[in-house]
Length: 304
Image (cartoon, one colour):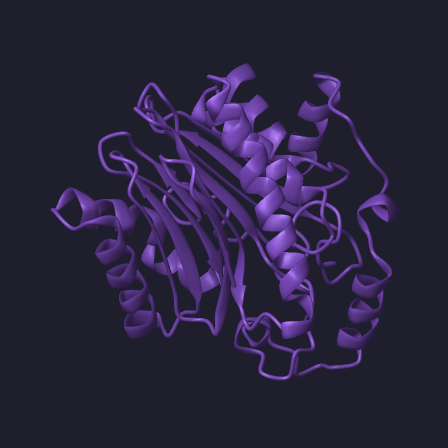
C-alpha cells in the first residue's frame, strides 16, 4: 500500500489575513507526517507527528495559542486512534501539557483505560515523566486580550466563533490528521483547546471516540472540527464511517454527514476523511476550512 496523509487546521470563517499562516502550518504538518510514512513509519506515528507540529504553532487552537476558559486557564483535549485494533487513547480538560496528542497515545499504550481527564490525566503525565509547562508557556498575548474582551460580553455565545463574519477570531482551529501507512493501517488524531470562554472542565467533541475522531481499517479514518456541542450530538466521525460501510465513497460520506449535521442540529463544522484504499476527502459547512494532503503518488495540496 502506498502511504498518504491528510491534515486540517480548523473549519470556520478564516480571515484572509491569516490564510498564509494556516497554509504554512498545515503544509509543514502534512510534510512531517508524510516523512514518517515514506520512512516506513506507522500511521500512528505519522498522525502524532503531524498534530504535534500544529500544537507547537500558535496559529491554531491546539497546544500553544489555545483559547482560555472562563477562569483564564488553558485546558486541552486530544485523541489518537489505531484503525487496525480500534484501540484509542484520549485526554480531556488537561492543563500544563504542550502536546496532549502524545499524552493521549501514552494513555492508549501504557494504561488499561481509553480516556483520562483533568487532574487524573495530569497525574498520569507526571507519573510517566511527560514534559509539563506553565500556563504562560501555552498562552499568547492575543488570546489573553481576547479573554479579557469576552469577559465584558455577557451575551457571548461559543457558536459565534464558527459563524463569525467580522474576522474577530484569528486563532481558533482545532487540528487533526489521518494517515494510511504502507501496511494498510489507518490512524487518526485530533487535538484542540476547545471553545473560548468555555466552563472549566468542559470537554468537547475532539477527544470523544466517534465524535471528533475515528479510525477503522475496514472503512475510513476521520478527524472532525467545529462547534463541538453539535458534532457530539450526531457522532459525526463514526457517522462518516457508517456511510462508507454502506457503500458510499469517502467524499459522498463526508458530504452526507455534514448535511445531516446542519439539517438535524443546525451544527457547524468540517471533517477530513481517508479511506482504506487511500482516497481522501474533506467537507464543511463553515465559510472555510484549512486542509493539506499528500496523496499516494506524492502530490501535495494545501487549501483554505
